Picture: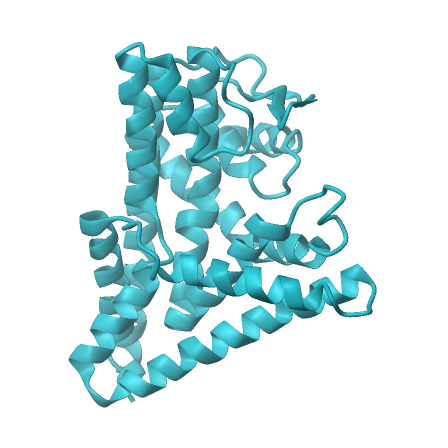
Length: 323
């Protein structure tokens, strides 16, 4: 079998290279957009079931996972006839689930608008990556929201899909991305989704639990290399601060970024006109400005490179030991 060789490590490496070179092209046949179309279609079907919304929502979630698990596994089995085809298609599948270049590009576009003092464009660019209201944010608030977004997305856009690709190959990455996409579409606590999306939200929390905590290691190493604060020395503070976040996972990388960059994050914000009161993470930190966005992008990139390098190296070592 192909998986008894170095191909898994080569596939992981190729996926990273593809993401750094191409990024996330915006077209209708991107796998994540196909996931979204399937989710939209099946939601309409399962909402018609004469069941408790939590039960029908759970069945909806499981059916989408099983559907894409079968599809991705079938693709892997089908392309197993040729090694070059196998590596190429497998790399494409994993590449489509990670989004480092896209995330950095979005942050850079916000930064570019702020540096030109185009606050309206900066707000518009920010609205593409956050769910909060952006129309009344000032420079500092835009900078804060940008860093929050890239820190949170370090988990679900970078480490989690790569973690599951390492463990389960392309199908592992695909299944994770389906879980994450369902959470982003139905995992809300509003009247429409609080019951139907309950299972989707909880499953996403479960899937990100280990990757979110692993993120501390990679962010900490990157922070030390960049000459920032060693957050391993204040790990207790990071964990305590992360509890201020509504998510059991997103608060961890956000707290890491806040302490590494010596800035405060989170705090009160508005969603669809409704003000949400939240405590600041790293209350003693300064308010971020455009310079902190630059530093945040550097921290994100280096953290991701250390993460990728670690998993690819381990994959090569496993192949070497069991060849």
